[in-house]
Image (cartoon, rainbow over all chains, first blue to last red; front, side, top):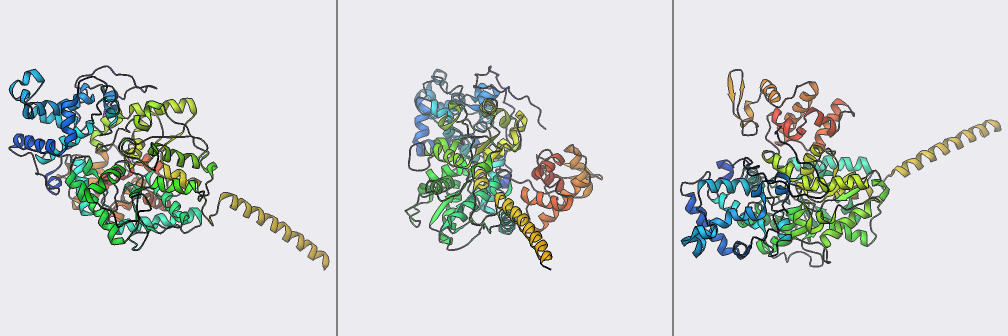
Length: 526
Length: 110
């Protein structure tokens, strides 16, 4: 196990003492040549990497005007400096958002501005050296692209755009990250991040159907590749594989069952995640999104619903239409795409779900807003729907709900520490330390309100928390899926409940008393 | 990060997962387990053997839920839960047990 000391948890995030170079050793593994080449990137660092990098940067600046504006707009006001969870958790000044931006801004000034070309020392312009490149690799892999800093920046400068662009440039010179690029390759080869092939997926779903039948006495299905279904569900492959994710999947299945809709999963598009966003590759992002559109058309569905996955929802909500749209073959009477929480919320509003809140009485819940849902997309048709809808779903399913502190929820939410392509074991120290602001806010509601569990709607958040919560003295299973709460509370038509079981026991007991009585009476007749 | 078993060198990636599955042997599993600070007993082997059998049929490691159910069947209900699996493999049954069983690392948001 890695050897490092965790920061002390604070109820309110305090500005840490500056610790220069504290995380300079933290780098993820570099992608192997075959992982690089499978995505059309050079296998290893090319000889003319310097010129290629500058050329690629020029291309990106030309095509993405936001990034160009961000390069020029920063006035060094400092509002962002204490907003990044990685800075708060590590004290490394290079994890201040403005410092992270400046890693690229100084190169921008040197090669793309007049003053930087002629008077570099006046404007902080620097040559792109191997040292700088290594620093890029280190610190652009210490940004989870959560965009919290952009909320506090008076100009709205989004550091995520810098780290996406930097990773795109590094991929194109042969210096990609193993975790993301290996996974994207698996999506192309097999259909999902996990490498779960159709045979294994089908077997897993059948196994889960057995569990659902055992638990409820109702035949709740998890259909796969069923042509003619109305709804295609796109969900992270972690929902098929990991804990606590899988209980969320069972929750979706129960909701669909109770709603009486026909739905299906797809083995071709058995993944909602789109890690291409993390590496800033629009080209790869389009290819990954395309297969979802293809699957929807092949299956002939009318609607697409997205399961609990943070960045997938951003890609679906914000990028699908531009990248691979139009989705005019879908039913325009429903949101395109629709979030599973919107679907469940809608049924709750209509009173179509029978929910027994007491099924979750053993827990007191709080909700962790996931970055990409909170700051990069929306839900429903009301402002702030992405905050309201998941909470309303939770509150409809449990009696005990408490929010964490205001400056750590909604658009101010803290990243779990593992987003943006950093959910890998080789970055565990960064992940653990970066989780500390969220863990501090969580600890506060645990102490003040007896909160026992945190619910989330993102596969990355769930995995990250089940890993880091025990490090901070909480339970590994204290993180759960929102739809696990739904699954616990929902009473399906025809479902055997504990009350039923008691009634049956009672009836059987009464019956046997009756039987005994009549036997006695019968005996008397003789 | 290669392993040495019976005078042979077995290739592995940076994280200790062997790169050629056909090089796996029980001795190698023992060597990997030592690296992982795990003292292999019968229950550990039960899990490792199940993983290898499952992989042979499906070319992927089983979902954690599938694994716990299998363990429940063979080792009893008190051991058929993820808590027990984490006691056996503290770094996570999926990743650590796969490494010892010579299977590829499960990737993604897991």
